[in-house]
Length: 119
Image (cartoon, rainbow, N blue to C red; front, side, top):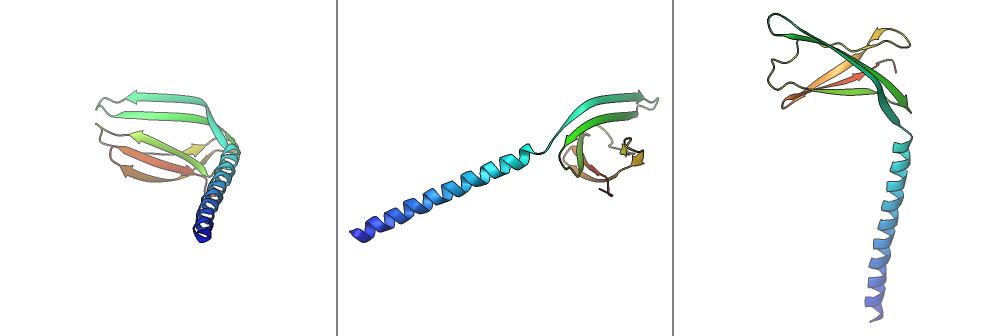
């Protein structure tokens, strides 16, 4: 009888220990996430419709970053279009320079991961 109670106690103790570890992990993750944030402080878009029906789109995003970041992700829907012929990402502050990016396509969305290779 004593062995059965001991096994139950061990199971309860193990479950409580796992719950405690999970709670500690969740709080640690939340504090790390709270140390990083960003917001888009300004957005400007210019769209030019060409005579052949194509469009030229120029977008300028202004970001405010708090914490360490490696870059941004820009996802654009391409459903009903022929896709992109040209994409460029640049940084204007503190200096003008073209940024590196990777492109991936999933369903009707194209995603650009834009980063500064020197960072």
